[in-house]
Image (cartoon, rainbow, N blue to C red):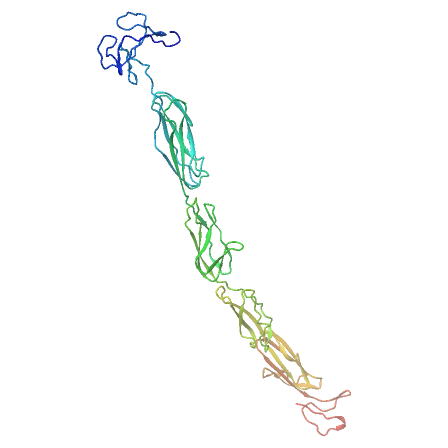
Length: 469
C-alpha cells in the first residue's frame, strides 16, 4: 500500500504461548523461535507466505523479531543494518575540580574536563555555572556549548579569576544540560571548589636614628596590605602619643626599641613586626651669658655680673666665684653651673665668661698741693696713666713724692711734676707732701731766702715767713 505500511494476512503458523509452532517458513523445525516473519515488498507485504511461492518481484527484507528487538538477520542470512539505535548518554571525564589561590595574588592555572557521548544518537548541550554561598562570577567554562555524535568527546577548559574574591572556600556547579537531540541522563554536574588562602604581608618601618630626649619623633610605617600599622614601645624610656599624630616622646636617656606591626584581617595574615632600636641622649642646656663689663678692683661681684640665663629647662644656677666676692685685678674667669630640675632629660650645663678687673691707684696729696687725677683712680688693666703733682700755687714746692711706697727723688723741690705709670697690672698708691717757700708781697717775696732758715724775728705786721716741711 503506497504511502504507508500494510500487513497481509499472516502466513500459516500456529502461535503457541510466547511464539509460533516452532517451524520457520522453510520447513525447518525450530522449536526455539518465538517470532513472526513478514515479507515486505515496496509499499507493503505481498500477502504470500514463503513456502515455495515464487515471487521474483519481491525486493524485501525479512526480519526475525525475537524478544525486545530484531536479531539483525533476515531469514535468508542477510544482515539487517537498520536495527533500533541506542540513545545518547552524557559522560564526564573527571570528578570534582579543585583550585587553590592566594588573596591578591595570581589566578590559579586552568584545568580541563571532557564531555563524551557513550550512546549512538547525537545531541547538543550547554555548560551553565551556578555558585554556592559567598563569591560568584569567579569560574568560566570554555567552550560554553558543545555537540557530540555517538562515541565522540569534547574537551572544555575551566578557568578561575580571583580578582575581587576574598580569602575563603567557595563552590560552584557546572551543569552539562541537554540542548538538542537525545540523551537519557541530562543534566550531569561537575563540582568545582576554590580555596583562596590569606596573603602574607610585610611592614616597612624606616630607621629612626639617634635622638635627643627633647625630640618629638613622628612614627610612620606602611604595610603591603594597606592596613593601618600600630606601634608599641618594646623597651626604653619612651612613650607613644597619638595627638595630633602618632609620635614618640622620651622620658629619659638610653636605648629605645619600638615595634611596628599589622595584625592582619580576613584576607591578610598578621605581618612580622619590625623593630627600630636607637639611642637617646640627654640634652645639654644652652646658657646665655654675656661677657660682663670690666670693673674696678674692690667692686664685689653681684647680679650685674652673675646673670647667666637659660630658656629651658628650669633649674638652679651656681656661680664661682660667688656673689659678693671681690676679684683680683686682671682677667678673672667666672663659672655658671646650671642644674636642671628635669635631670632625667637634661645634662648639667656649664658656662664660662671672663671679667676684667682694672687696678686702682689710691691718690693722696698733702695740704698745700694737689695730684690730678685724685682720689681713687682706675687704670685699665695693663694700661698707663699720668699723675700731675703740684703745689697749690707757686709758693709751695714738692717736698716728697712716693709711688707704691717708693720715693721719687726727681720730684723733690719742684713746684710741679708729672708721674707716669706704665703697664699697670696691680693696685697702687701715690702720695705727695709740699713745702711753703715764702710769701709773695707786691713785686716779689719778702726778702728771705729759701734755704730753710726760719726767721722768727720777722716783723709780725709783715707776716710770718716759714719754710713748711
